[in-house]
Image 1 (cartoon, rainbow, N blue to C red):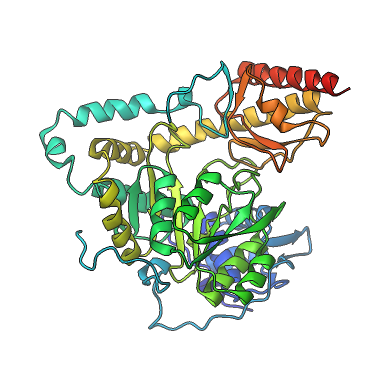
Image 2: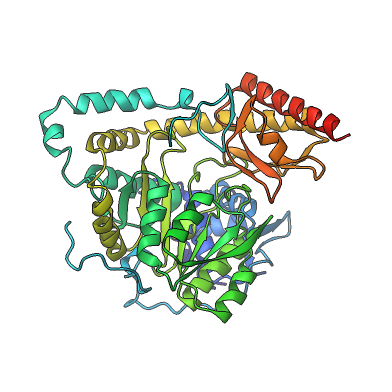
Length: 487
């Protein structure tokens, strides 16, 4: 029997629940090849005795792994690693090679900005706006955030330090994020691995400018986040599109491309892909990480709405794995608080963060020190955690309510797969109905639609039940009119 007391590391002082620590350790053992597909795991009773924890804690860990398809539970028989996990070569452990992922330098070529670094026009919209997945600002703790902001502007120490160190982000916010990202995403990082940005879009831009050039190749999903595609185009790099299906971006296709040409980066949205909302499968996550190591390309992981998952805990980010520093992780608080509050972050190896910070100074001398300190206070006092718990419950209810409305009122016009999380549904029109005709209706505004896919994103989080009914009724009227017109 494997020495599970050494495979599963439990830190009783950690803020991560013990059952999740068990799940994370087993996931890492699978990723590292220690636990192979089909391997039988100890019973909950045996593992609880080995680890010195309550049996219910082990059961909760197993249920978490089962919900994310890492293991298979056969009641009254056995628990085993999923058969869909690819066969990985076990990694040799060496006491001289115990660096955490972001303690490694990024060895993949990128632009060096400097060797020595220091520490739309107004648019009139109708009343009904179907956004692409925005939070409901009415639920946001903006009042608490602004109250803290105002209090900081009256304190001498806050005024004195408001503009110090904001190019990379205030130390106070980065310190809070080290703990927050460890607890929520399993990231093992330091303040040197974090850059605070004006939203995910700035992080994508900075990453692209340093990783890509006119001779570079970058792989993206098809369809993809259009702003990201535009950002990559600006570098003059060649964009190679790979299809996204119900399991996420096609990693087999990525492998075939890598065997033919040098790939510098892969941009991926593994958690609630934009725009389709699909989640990258465990099998493809593992394969993408292995391909990154084999073919030496960077992974730009855009995790814009990680916090909203409704059926179980979200999959851990690619950035939480043993990736040798190849993953550039991007997140945002705009999807939690308010789209108008441009606050995002990038996590990467220290040497890459230094150069992103230097390049950022060319276009932006720094962020809002007061706002960053106010956000740090919101995180430290668990106000953000309480808000997420409340809003997640509300958005879950709104997703289910919209699901009923779409089936009852638009069933003959549309098809979709209900997402497990996120803030929008990817709605496909049936072939005889045109998305172009739908978006031309001036009674409402659809923010994100795709002509080739004949589909649009229906953001449900920002609307209450009455507003959802109004939006669906407007869509129904337009589709009915279009149906009569085509007859």
